Image (spheres, rainbow, N blue to C red):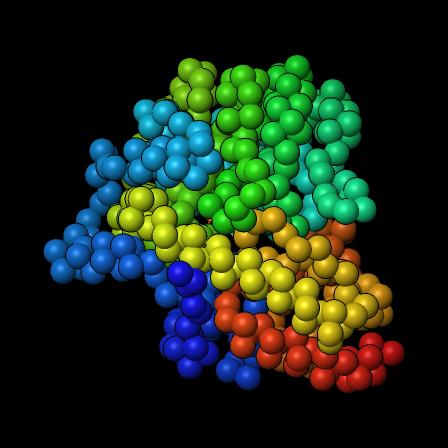
Length: 389
Ligand SMILES: Cc1ncc(COP(=O)(O)O)c(C=O)c1O
């Protein structure tokens, strides 16, 4: 059963960033929120909590870690140990808190652009210095540049902030490359923090490997930070999990101040437990079916209306990374698209220098909104061309 997005009129009633940043004449396909109704088990859990007035602090013992372990077993065939996990407010906070403990101020942290823009800021917030090692474009996909990462680590970089699956490309690294990355890190005494927030959204048949499941080296030197928040659209509820798989890494996470865990949102925890429970599996399968259609619809719409656009259908998530260079709309095409077509896309250059000429389109919406958005851009083409001259 497919999960259908809400109508534009219903969505306009929402008050989150996606629906309030721009005026009503703009179609928003930028920030990573989705336009679907909540999964029924999530709605029920939140309604029950409201009825109980269950709005206090999150308890020190919750079913969240066990729920994630069950989810990982069912969806990825991996059995992380719930006693080696701790919750926090969001994935960003988990990354910063772990980074602070595994690097010294001023040490370098590898990121792989084009990359989710806050990665640059999170490294900075943790006192580190970003070392950019771009993804390698193989001509048919993207992969980690293990040689260049190895050089950076040999040259003193102390950690790798991995995005698995990758935002914005939707690329899913192979188990082999994850294991190779872990071995390199271990060889150089470095750490890997794997952001796995998009993992529940890997399309069936892709062959997803959680970093900590990729091998013994990964278990020894790796951390994963994850959340139900992208797949189930729960970002505002503030709940994420830091996951480890060895005694030393578990000790680092256990050593974080208790305040880090106290910042977990109570509603976020309750919603995540419902989202990760077997009861929500059918809903998630339905969402993946919808996203599968949408990722192909983006290809069809671009081929029909903007044939110069270059786009690879992503293996995970609801983000399309589109190269508009051949349209001649300059380094940041989303700016003119916003102004002339009234469609808000994420700015390519925010993802690093590799994002010049690119836009990121959020296709976690209805086919109607997606079609309208790309048709609007096509209709504005002449105006954008003129503005660009
Ligand atoms: C790769 C990645 N990491 C982290 C986040 C933010 O997660 P959180 O709101 O839990 O900090 C996002 C949001 O889109 C993301 O795409």
